[in-house]
Length: 127
Image 1 (cartoon, rainbow, N blue to C red):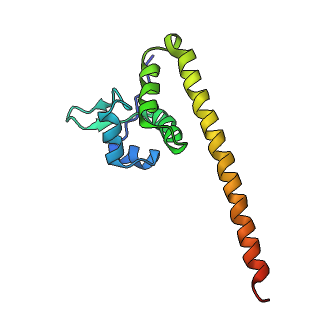
Image 2 (image 1 turned 90 degrees about the horizontal axis):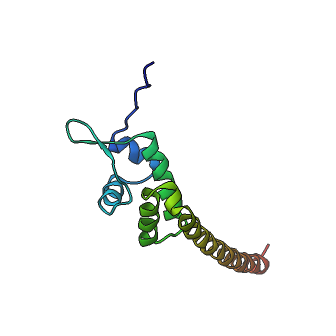
Image 3 (image 1 turned 30 degrees about the vertical axis):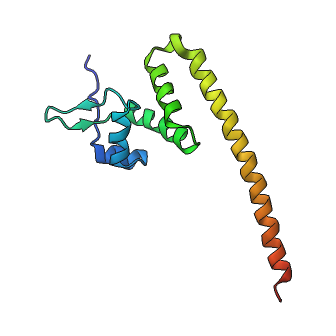
């Protein structure tokens, strides 16, 4: 039985699919957020679907405001093995989830304040 061939993406394709710039991909690799990115015989980086899945997690963490240091710690925990760090990974994500929840509550309150101001301006405009 043969195994299916792995489909590789160029850095440009990975950047397009992940929403990260090429510079960000290089930076994430340099600081250890991306590890074991494959290389073609020519030395060019090539990304797999697994890499894209990981980039999706990094995008979520970044977009929700997780600091780079925490992202790096999370990546290190993930690389350490499933069982060895599962509780610590979960705790880190739960702390981050609480921070995201607080940020959402703050944004909702600020949005409500904006809407009250908009309503006020509408009320004072001549018809």
